[in-house]
Image 1 (tube, one colour):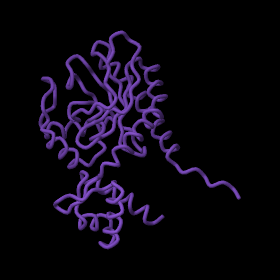
Image 2 (image 1 turned 135 degrees about the vertical axis):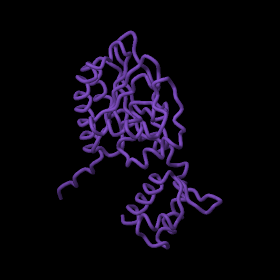
Image 3 (image 1 turned 60 degrees about the horizontal axis):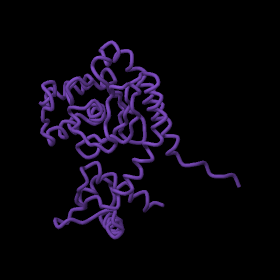
Image 4 (image 1 turned 180 degrees about the vertical axis):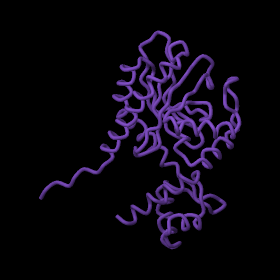
Length: 252
């Protein structure tokens, strides 16, 4: 069991550093001796969960992709009742997103019943600086990590409202953290607004959002809707934590 715990810890360290790392960096981050790390990484390489690069650094392996896709589908199934509640309460399309590398990926959606509604394909990956969910996700990171992410993406402007400099984006993240929600004000698509809330305290970094046309997503509506989305995000975090908690051992 100790080796299993260590293997998972090493995989999480690799993921946190962008998916590629050296053995010495793993030793520094984990506090484990190099021989132990070498033995564990060799087992992970043999099973396809880690791969060794020509540079002799280690990277996350292809077998994790299938596991991640299955986990995302299950997460979407668990999130659907919460997103459905949002649609019933607020009438607009509800989404769940996670951070995937330098982009935000949509993992679940429940569409609005309005004839004119927003639709984002599950699995779509978007640059985080221009998306409400992206802002809500990056606001959960230390500022240096969040800004490093948008610097890598280049922050292209999708519309004239898109925030396109790291300095302006840092100020935007401060506003998100202060008020507890993010807004995409036509920054990804003209005429569309999105209200997004971080899913705090859950088993992974996620964001819940509602999106719709500016004509319905007025600023007054956003002010009234924000506490509703925050409540649903908190309920989702609690639900996912319950589901991820190991079952109690049966009595003998």
